[in-house]
Length: 415
Ligand code: IFM
Image 1 (tube, rainbow, N blue to C red):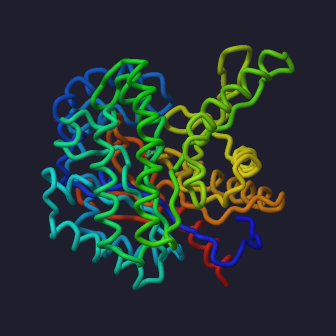
Image 2 (tube, rainbow, N blue to C red; image 1 turned 135 degrees about the horizontal axis):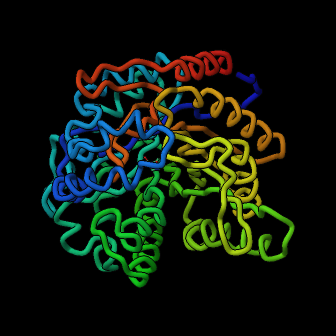
């Protein structure tokens, strides 16, 4: 692992989201999972049969249970243990999401039990000196809000703003970093254009409407949060993958830059003025020839995603040059069940962070996706993103070799 001089108080840690790890949730996703588990299992061979790891995952991927979050990683019950693990791994920050459907299970009814739970959760982090980075919307919604049309209806945004105000006024200034919306355009694209996620619509109009409404939701929630206290540091977590031309043809160069613009700036232009920093989620790069993306597939993750960790540097440089806001990498990682590639991914990523810093980019943190193996939405539980492996039968945790290396690096960097 390379050793670098990172800024003091750089946030080093990992990310998780409520629905993917907590278990026992009842929201629009859990309802959808139960309705679709059988058909997702039936399509598994067609969906994943070409992946290199098909033989290793087929038993799991062919079973409907794989597609039901259920107990997930049982983090709701085991958070004290998991936070201790975060500490033991020398991390200084944890990004997690609060589950709106627990906090406001029925419209206008706040659950004091759920609020107390998240207060205890934050207190546990603070006790260990771990900086919370809290997410308010990470793809899951209370059923009542989804039934009203969710973020497709602009008039529903007020419910999200009310929830944001409520939870932050309850948690108070024990929290500083707030992500309003996670990967807004991934959510809109998967749920309203491709129809892979609930509510499984396939409409261009809905795609644009939801994207635009999520920008408004962020702006209004940020305003409400800032009026509680100007000390909150608010952002979105923007998915930002890297597009580059595969050859020198003018069309490839133009297309790559248009794709980058469309992915990043179309949304960020609407929200950056109400952000105190930018959260960046980086997973892969896209090589563009003419109008098309065609990746070299030299190194791929278990999900078949191109692995080009070095390109994080370009993404950070591009966003910083454009928006002049401090950056925190709020997600970055790879699905790697054998844990053979994650260590390499981490060291290349750390070098990319160093290069970006050396170029003058104001990077303030790195949060690896993910702390734990977790429920990967419509793909279920077979993709393994965790620095820490979860045995879904016993819920036992074991830190993977890559997790141990990351911990050793963080120890050195912290000394
Ligand atoms: O698991 C997801 C997460 O919920 C959002 N960002 C990408 C991750 C890996 O696909």
